[in-house]
Amino acid sequence: MAHSFRELVIGGVLVAPFMAYAAAALFVVLLIRPLLRFVGFLRLFSNAAIAELSLYVTILGLIALFF
Image (cartoon, rainbow, N blue to C red):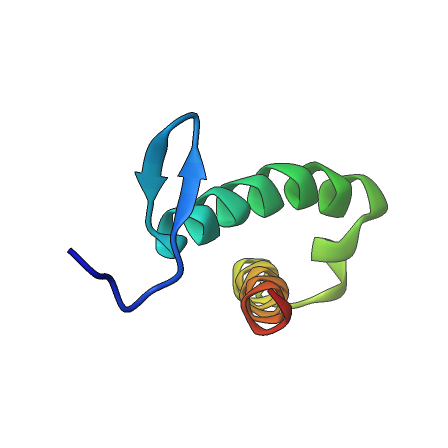
């Protein structure tokens, strides 16, 4: 069966690209959240949750664009 998306094989298992993006999203959130809390990024904004989410979306959008 032919797929219209690029295929990724990890350990002999065929993985769709959206799974790689989901793993990247999890990695970015787990890596960036402690860093943002350490540098005090969230104190700069009146609505810290929206600022944090906007940063995540921007980073993941750039990952999807460049890779």
